[in-house]
Every structure is written in C-alpha cells, then in structure tokens.
Image (cartoon, rainbow, N blue to C red; front, side):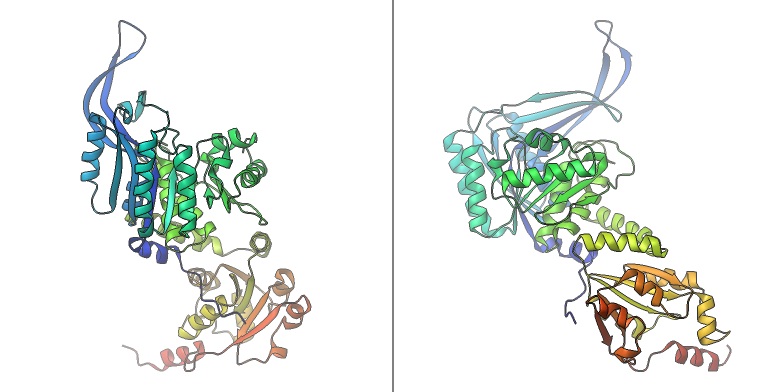
Length: 495
C-alpha cells in the first residue's frame, strides 16, 4: 500500500506563493501607450489621425515577468540593464511605485539607449508601434556588473527566469555564466529563449519557446500535436534541458519531457483582447508554481490559465492572485460536472492517465449520505494511487440491494456530490448489483474497499490481482454509517 499523501490542490499552491521568490534576469524595457481616438483620415496620406489623450508607461520584458510574479502573490527579484536616459529614469519611477513584491537591482549602461516600445491606441485597436532600441550585446563592464548582482541575489530565490528578448542583456558572456551559477547553487532555470541556437541555453531546466521560436530553432512548425511534440523533442536534444514547454498560442501548450509522452494542454482563453505580455504572465505563473513545489504538468496548467486571463486584458497587463484563484474556482466547478462520465469516456481518460505513467485506483459504493467515514475512505483511497475512479450504484441497483426506501438521494445528486470531492477524479454509474464489469473494463492498478471485507470477499479482487494489481483494505471510521444516520433522522421528533 502506498503511503503517499494526496497531491496538493491548485489552491494549496496559490496559498504558498508569498513564501517564494523568483529571480528574473533579462531584457528590461519600457512599454508606453498613447491612448486616443480616431475621427478622420489624414488629408496628407491614407492614414488615420489619432487625437492623443492620456498616456501611460509600464514595465515590459523581464520587468513585466517580475510584476506578474508579484501580482500573483509571489516575490520577484528583478535584474536588468537600462540606459542613462529619460526612458531609464521612467523605468526607475515605475519600479519605485511597484510595491514590495518587486525588488530591483538594475545595472546602468552609459550611452546605451533604454529599450522602449510605444504603442498608439484608438480604443482597443493598436494603430502603430514604434520601437527605440539596440540589440547589441552589453559592454563587458556591464556584463560583470550584472553577473555580480545576479550572484548576490541568487541565494534569496528558489528559481531563476531568464527573460530573453534579444535586446543584448543576455549576451554570451551573461547567459552561459548565469545558467552555470544557478545550477551550481541548485536553482532550477526557466529560459524563455529568443536565439535559434538552443545550445546557448544548454543546462537550463526548462525552455519555453513560442511557435515561431521553436520553428526557427528546429525547422519543425508545431501546427498540430504531433509536430509540437516532434519540435519539443528536437529542442530537448539541442539544449539538454529537462523539459520543453511549447507555447502554441490559441492551441495551448505542449509539455515535452525525456522518456515520457507529451502532454497537450488546450488554451483557456475565452475572449482575446490583446496578446501583449501574455507570454510574460505565463512564465511568471509557471515559475512561481514550480517555486512553490508544484510539478511540471500542474505548473504548466496553472500558467495556461493565467495566460488565458491575460489575453483578455488590453495592453501589457498583470494577472492578480485573486483573479487566478477565481478562474481556478470556476474551472473546478465545471470540472465537477466533467468528472461524471459513462464507462467508454472513463476508459479513454484512464488510457491518457496511464500514458502519463499515473497509477489508477478504483472503489465503489452507494454513497447515499456523505459522512466522515466516506471522507476518510476516499482520502485514504486516493493516497494509494494517482487517480481515483469511483463506481456509484444507480438508483435501481440501490433499491434491489437495500430496499424500496433507498436511496435517499437520487443517482444524479449522489454523483454530483461525489464528483465535488477533492480525492475523486472520475465517477461512473453502474446498474448491476456489483461493479465487476467496471473493474474488468478499467483494470485498476489498485482496488480499494473497507476493512469490513476480507480480500477474498472483494468483488473484482481476482481480476485485479491477475494483472499484477493490488487490493487494499482501509479501516473504517467507527460510529458513522448512512443507515445509522437515516435511523436517527427517522427517530427525531417532528418540529
């Protein structure tokens, strides 16, 4: 019997964000927005005339990653380079107002322009973007300064993000040395790559290229799941990374790891307003989840949700902790309904779980009025496996087994309550008196029943043991049963 505890939920990890720090090193830039309205076309050329109103300035690039970490509830340490110019001063002012969630250590490069992207907006529409930048590598003295700041900040962080926008901060002298320092300190490194030669990011823990970047690096366009996996595996070979997370825009994410099937995560965006900075939001959420102790698939799924929120906002934007929590809560409510499924759908899902190397458990019962004994059984059952399937007797089946007055709740109500239980991953209704047909079809790795049975009495035990599975008997909590609860309700005086 496995002694593993149930996996922490997404909400558990979100609650831990404030205790973890992400070190963000990369290209720091200023995103300016000039907001106005268009009422006419210019008489000088066939172009709209923007009547400019207000303007705003926010951090872009590595700065947006750091601000998203802070908005999500984590702590960010931001390292980058600015020029000794007005835009650099503007970045300083924005950072001064960023709050305690972002601590910056910024190197100044004399004579080098600060990267600025200015977007001219009419309502939700972007009319024009003007970039002021240089992509030349930073000077050797600035490299040394930046690396010294990186080494000093490294002990305070659990994870490192390299935010590469090909603006020169992550030049050869900085990139390789930063990865080596982080790995020597035992800190995972997430590299958001811009270079087509992925060997430059060698020994990074995770690469997060988008569609264009991985196509340029591998020659494989990730137009479908199979191509995305092939491109991811080519990127793994080139970089020797532990994982590649391919950002596929409207098609979601593909997580590729050595010797494991690819995991494809569909997009969660409902309405796209602006994709600016969505990749930064994704990386921030992915990093802070990993820093909090989540595994790669769970971190990628949460990052995907955060990016879906981001693209629904105008301009370079952050996603707040409360927004992510609310979105996850809504997703969980929808997932509750999706847990109840017919046998054929359950088998398809179980096949997918097994492709991921997950251990599947099965238990069954009437579960008429959920009480602490049920909660104990389900919690301990889930601790024996990675995914728990519950077989639930239909109303007709219950009446045959327990008499015409049962069940108290309909099969729909019982299935809904069971699906809402955190340890449960799938619920299947069965009309027979026993779940033998389900067990034969599912072939669970673990069959769980209460310890009021002996192994030889458990329906399906021989089926499970025949294919090398395990039968686990769990001690029941005394004093709790549905029959006793019903008797107490029936004996209570009417009010």
